[in-house]
Image (cartoon, rainbow, N blue to C red; front, top):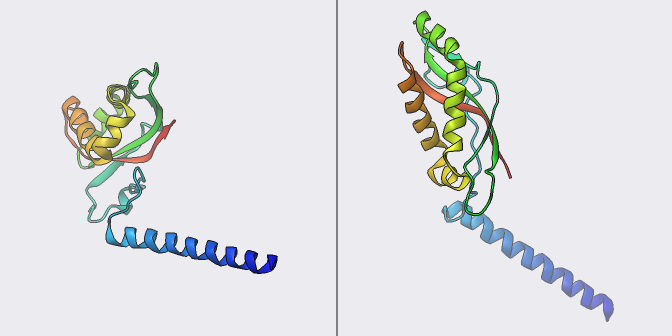
Length: 160
């Protein structure tokens, strides 16, 4: 009698697990379910960029930057994050390469100030693509000898 009840309970649990699994898969297939804040990795370098050509170079001299977002609501401090940005730019201009190296500290400051001006919630709501576009505009506005083509992140991690 007790073994029959245990067997029935096991079948019920397996059935419930199967139903949950089925509807989860169905939700992802239909597009109604999604994983929020899951980051798709950026290319690790120029060699991974499709149609990059031979005229692009990468600038990875900024390293990993630490920043703190603007505080939300009644919280006294923001959320810490680590970003490791790198740029793609036209390598044919050696003066522009020198300008990037010369303005390295200023470029780091742009990143840190940008994140300090936004809450974590704002950054998540506008999305990583928009963050990169805004940073690209800020950085290009600070440059005189040329423009960077794109910004990529090797790291983009929030520490709650």
